[in-house]
Length: 147
Image (cartoon, rainbow, N blue to C red):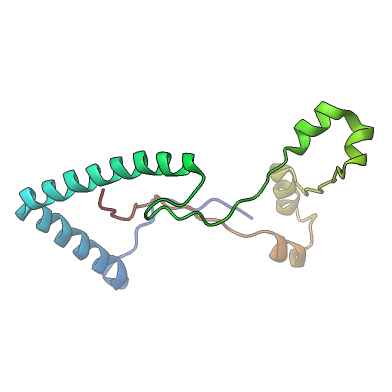
Protein backbone atom coordinates (compact mmCIF):
# COMPACT_ATOMS: atom_id res chain seq x y z
CA UNK A 1 0.00 0.00 0.00
CA UNK A 2 1.42 3.34 -0.96
CA UNK A 3 0.41 6.65 0.55
CA UNK A 4 2.16 8.86 -1.98
CA UNK A 5 0.33 10.28 -4.96
CA UNK A 6 1.78 11.91 -8.04
CA UNK A 7 1.53 15.65 -7.29
CA UNK A 8 2.06 16.45 -10.97
CA UNK A 9 -1.24 14.93 -12.11
CA UNK A 10 -3.27 17.74 -13.64
CA UNK A 11 -6.88 17.24 -14.63
CA UNK A 12 -8.68 19.03 -17.48
CA UNK A 13 -10.01 22.39 -16.34
CA UNK A 14 -13.19 21.96 -18.39
CA UNK A 15 -14.27 19.05 -16.17
CA UNK A 16 -14.35 21.32 -13.11
CA UNK A 17 -16.49 24.41 -13.74
CA UNK A 18 -16.02 25.79 -10.22
CA UNK A 19 -12.27 26.11 -10.82
CA UNK A 20 -12.86 27.87 -14.13
CA UNK A 21 -15.36 30.22 -12.47
CA UNK A 22 -12.80 31.04 -9.77
CA UNK A 23 -10.19 31.83 -12.43
CA UNK A 24 -12.66 34.08 -14.29
CA UNK A 25 -13.52 35.90 -11.04
CA UNK A 26 -9.80 36.35 -10.30
CA UNK A 27 -9.23 37.77 -13.79
CA UNK A 28 -12.23 40.12 -13.39
CA UNK A 29 -10.89 41.38 -10.04
CA UNK A 30 -7.41 41.95 -11.42
CA UNK A 31 -8.91 43.74 -14.44
CA UNK A 32 -11.05 45.98 -12.23
CA UNK A 33 -8.04 46.91 -10.12
CA UNK A 34 -5.98 47.61 -13.23
CA UNK A 35 -8.77 49.77 -14.75
CA UNK A 36 -9.44 51.61 -11.48
CA UNK A 37 -5.96 51.85 -10.00
CA UNK A 38 -6.47 55.32 -8.49
CA UNK A 39 -9.68 54.24 -6.71
CA UNK A 40 -8.04 51.03 -5.53
CA UNK A 41 -4.99 52.90 -4.23
CA UNK A 42 -7.23 55.36 -2.35
CA UNK A 43 -9.26 52.49 -0.87
CA UNK A 44 -6.06 50.74 0.26
CA UNK A 45 -4.73 53.96 1.80
CA UNK A 46 -7.99 54.65 3.66
CA UNK A 47 -8.32 51.07 4.85
CA UNK A 48 -4.69 51.01 6.01
CA UNK A 49 -5.21 54.26 7.94
CA UNK A 50 -8.41 52.86 9.48
CA UNK A 51 -6.67 49.65 10.54
CA UNK A 52 -3.76 51.57 12.09
CA UNK A 53 -6.18 53.77 14.06
CA UNK A 54 -8.18 50.67 15.06
CA UNK A 55 -5.09 49.03 16.59
CA UNK A 56 -4.20 52.20 18.51
CA UNK A 57 -7.76 52.79 19.74
CA UNK A 58 -8.18 49.15 20.76
CA UNK A 59 -5.04 49.30 22.92
CA UNK A 60 -6.29 52.44 24.64
CA UNK A 61 -9.82 51.07 25.14
CA UNK A 62 -8.60 47.71 26.50
CA UNK A 63 -6.30 49.49 28.94
CA UNK A 64 -9.35 51.13 30.56
CA UNK A 65 -10.98 47.78 31.35
CA UNK A 66 -14.31 49.35 30.39
CA UNK A 67 -16.43 49.87 27.26
CA UNK A 68 -15.41 52.88 25.19
CA UNK A 69 -17.34 53.78 22.03
CA UNK A 70 -17.54 50.75 19.72
CA UNK A 71 -15.14 48.77 21.96
CA UNK A 72 -17.62 46.85 24.06
CA UNK A 73 -16.42 44.88 27.06
CA UNK A 74 -18.07 41.47 26.79
CA UNK A 75 -16.99 39.71 30.00
CA UNK A 76 -14.39 39.53 32.70
CA UNK A 77 -12.92 36.41 34.28
CA UNK A 78 -10.04 35.56 36.56
CA UNK A 79 -7.42 33.27 35.08
CA UNK A 80 -5.21 31.22 37.37
CA UNK A 81 -1.82 29.98 36.23
CA UNK A 82 -1.95 26.53 37.86
CA UNK A 83 1.63 25.63 36.98
CA UNK A 84 2.95 28.85 38.53
CA UNK A 85 0.77 28.33 41.62
CA UNK A 86 2.19 24.81 41.99
CA UNK A 87 5.74 26.19 41.75
CA UNK A 88 5.02 28.90 44.32
CA UNK A 89 3.28 26.86 47.06
CA UNK A 90 4.37 23.26 46.47
CA UNK A 91 2.46 20.01 45.90
CA UNK A 92 0.77 19.65 49.29
CA UNK A 93 -0.55 23.21 49.48
CA UNK A 94 -1.47 23.11 45.79
CA UNK A 95 -3.90 20.27 46.52
CA UNK A 96 -5.26 22.10 49.59
CA UNK A 97 -6.23 25.17 47.56
CA UNK A 98 -8.10 23.17 44.92
CA UNK A 99 -5.27 22.26 42.60
CA UNK A 100 -5.19 18.91 40.86
CA UNK A 101 -3.24 17.21 38.09
CA UNK A 102 -4.52 15.34 35.05
CA UNK A 103 -3.03 12.59 32.98
CA UNK A 104 -3.73 12.88 29.27
CA UNK A 105 -3.46 9.79 27.08
CA UNK A 106 -2.17 10.38 23.57
CA UNK A 107 -2.04 7.50 21.09
CA UNK A 108 0.81 7.70 18.62
CA UNK A 109 2.24 5.24 16.11
CA UNK A 110 5.56 4.88 14.34
CA UNK A 111 4.21 5.64 10.85
CA UNK A 112 6.99 4.00 8.84
CA UNK A 113 7.02 0.82 10.91
CA UNK A 114 3.23 0.49 10.76
CA UNK A 115 3.11 1.06 6.97
CA UNK A 116 5.91 -1.45 6.41
CA UNK A 117 3.86 -4.03 8.36
CA UNK A 118 0.83 -3.14 6.22
CA UNK A 119 2.88 -3.64 3.04
CA UNK A 120 4.11 -6.98 4.38
CA UNK A 121 0.50 -8.08 4.93
CA UNK A 122 0.92 -8.39 8.69
CA UNK A 123 -1.98 -6.03 9.48
CA UNK A 124 -5.46 -7.27 8.52
CA UNK A 125 -7.03 -5.40 5.58
CA UNK A 126 -10.21 -4.55 7.52
CA UNK A 127 -8.10 -2.76 10.13
CA UNK A 128 -6.13 -0.92 7.46
CA UNK A 129 -9.39 0.27 5.86
CA UNK A 130 -10.52 1.76 9.16
CA UNK A 131 -7.29 3.37 10.39
CA UNK A 132 -5.39 4.48 7.27
CA UNK A 133 -6.68 7.43 5.28
CA UNK A 134 -5.01 9.19 2.37
CA UNK A 135 -4.34 12.83 3.07
CA UNK A 136 -3.86 15.17 0.13
CA UNK A 137 -2.47 18.64 0.65
CA UNK A 138 -2.93 21.56 -1.69
CA UNK A 139 -1.28 24.92 -1.99
CA UNK A 140 -3.57 27.35 -0.23
CA UNK A 141 -4.78 30.25 -2.36
CA UNK A 142 -5.59 33.02 0.10
CA UNK A 143 -8.93 34.80 0.05
CA UNK A 144 -8.78 38.34 -1.23
CA UNK A 145 -9.11 40.71 1.67
CA UNK A 146 -9.09 44.44 1.31
CA UNK A 147 -6.54 46.03 3.63
